[in-house]
Length: 75
Image (cartoon, rainbow, N blue to C red):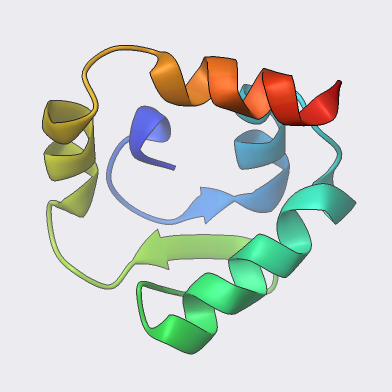
């Protein structure tokens, strides 16, 4: 989500960035909503609960290690 920038993001766009199906991100999305890290105002839209959290994530994880880890989980 941080890669997509601020504001609500579509679940499909998040799945596309990770290179997985939407059904794969749905359980993670539900857990993050339950933990209060993200929220959904509309069906399929997701946003961080903390303002500018996308900027923080991009600073905290500047390289693409998370993309490599995501790809490794699929194999």
